[in-house]
Amino acid sequence: MPMFVDTSPPGQCIFCRLVAGEIPSAKVYEDALTIAFMDIGQVTPGHVLVATRRHAATLLDATPEEAAAVMQTAHRVALAVQAVFDPPGLTLLQANGTLGGQTVAHFHMHVVPRHEADGIALTWPRKEPPAAVLAGYAERLRAAL
Image (cartoon, rainbow, N blue to C red):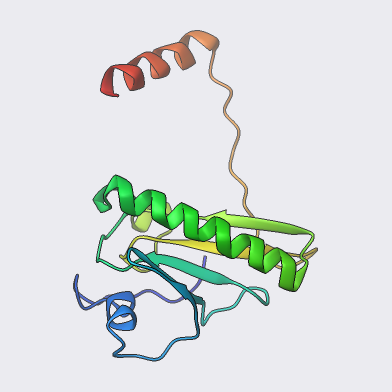
């Protein structure tokens, strides 16, 4: 994950300031619910962030409409990134909370063009719990839905 961590209080975070026009950005797209702009910490050329205009710290704080709008804008941006930069791969990354890897407490998604040896590693230990355990997890989630 990037080394930058925004420690601003809610409503004064770097993305809120960007939305308000208080700090400059290389905007790619904006609509009523979202804004897309170039990540200043470009991993690869064409790395874009898509964020909610309203401050929502995480996905869990966003409205269903805002969450859907972020994905719709990310899809639109991903198509543009593919057309302009023609990367052999593309990663969409959305992190929540410090332990989830979130470094700016404002709901956003990364659209990252991917290339061989670009330095990004998305790995985790595979656990493979028994089918009964998975069924139990699914049952608990269905009940919560």
